[in-house]
Length: 427
Image 1 (spheres, rainbow, N blue to C red):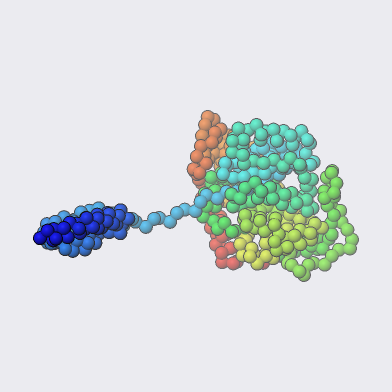
Image 2 (image 1 turned 60 degrees about the vertical axis):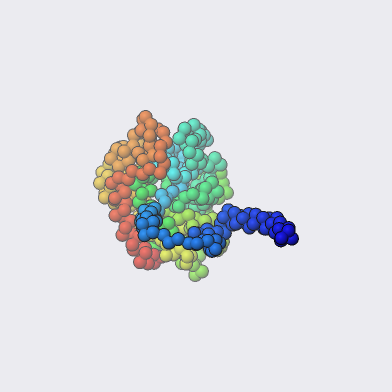
């Protein structure tokens, strides 16, 4: 009997230690998530008697589970594309300071980017005045989206220097920011017919790969007077402006690529601008060298590059988005627009118009009737706050499109539909 009692005491301590270790591992299993359900817990204590649950308890559990299960979320509505941004070049020459300044104020929006340029023919005091105005304007300073080309270029419209200046502005814009979708070149003689809110709203749903280039391969009289002559632009190597001059003999039309011509005013996609600047395909560089000796280079360079590059030929919408009243054929010189042209400009649905003289009364009509703009202030937009209106920056993503957006949408609906079908492109 005594031996039995001693034997039991001998095994009692190991039993207690073993039980403690089991309980420790069981607790660890709970903490580590190894035992996670009632079924798993019950299986661990299989040696204990089990009791059936009542129907009431089961019903409550099911009801509770149903109540706390959230209903499936509705499918999200398709998001509207992000608001696009434009990158502008606004250029002028001698005597264009006030015109350029007025056009800049009419075109301004905090989302966009701007390069302004008065060429080398402009007096130094005009160029300095432009720089001082921009550096001292509190809105431009706060946003930082207006850049002045301080080292001015000499530009002659009929030679390649205008294209060179445009490419210079494109390079600056690419370096300063990648956050823009289209590049637009304008002169101080251009003026908008829609607000920037109208333009941004309308282009929100436009394919960002589209390039708006008025073009044709039907050279007509330009075949002999533009395609074959060889010209030299003194603006490439002189510091004073002078007209281009011709060199003999004439040259044959190219066979390595097809020539296209059209308007000098374009709206180019970001992707296409990168293509002509970086020139990874060498076509832009080759054509730039060819057009160095071409009369009226701005009317052919971008057109010929885009139409001879397969990846861009089907992205062209055949328009320059301008209202221009041309002379009778050969349509070389645009008429100066005045107040008698107001209705035609509005009915065109165009985003811009040219040419205007400085402070012509028709500009006051456009400001009042189309842009809701006060003299010396910005065009009205959703971002405008302050007193006077548009003197301070509010929500830059707030757009308030007006009738101008409807006119522009009607114009672009047909043009982009034609482009998508492959019609009227590079022919």
